[in-house]
Image (cartoon, rainbow, N blue to C red; front, side, top):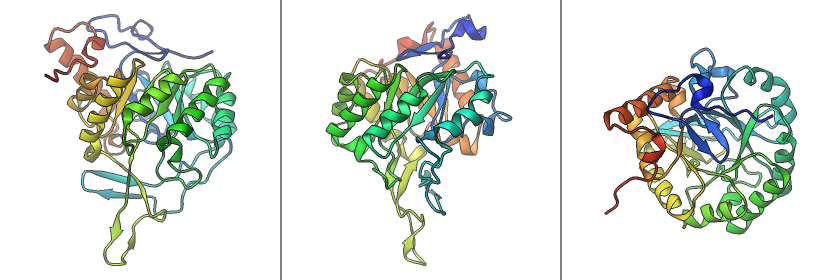
Length: 318
């Protein structure tokens, strides 16, 4: 059984309505926590009321346990972080046995971020989650810039993007949400490819390929040499790409990149996103997602708007 949640499930039946439908995933509000920034749920459960979130997107899962990259794997830079964790994870069986019993205790949709070293492996992982109780959807990590096995080629080659989504669509009945790379010449093209191949929604942006150098040693700071830039430094780029993607597709969009306040999230909604994901801010202030939810509600009240969905794509570009 796939778990979904609405306003009425949570007891929040008043106005304004914050409930959204993201490709079949019913959420009580449009604020998720982004994959790779919230662990698998237990890591934040003492700091955040998980039931208040729109959804939890767990850290990327491969078919088998994966050690990730060597350390150092994270470096602070002005306006954000560069990470090269390398998708360390316990594999499908380890995640299901260790973390799903905990997550099933909460009334919040669980979206599993999945990846593969080959196209076929994406399909294998998708299929293995298809009948797992409590999984609401799958986010396809086709654009991680800091793994050498396949790297970000899945998300920057139109033909390969199409093939990954097609294979996963055949393998799973769950809602599919490909996560798009920012470093492409035409984000609308990739969004349309995902929609054509059966994606139920898309999420963007993934982190931006980046590098930091230690000027004293004259060597890259990260053991992996390169990583992915996240945080406020990428926010304006992400807003523009979300707007462009929204012009190209009719499926829902999840916007992410540098959200630290309600205004950041509202920008994404106005640009065309139906939901947002809080990422790097979880590391510095775990209360961020909750504050963003409250800020969206306050905005709707101040502007006498009954339904958050009416905000989506309402930016005036004249």
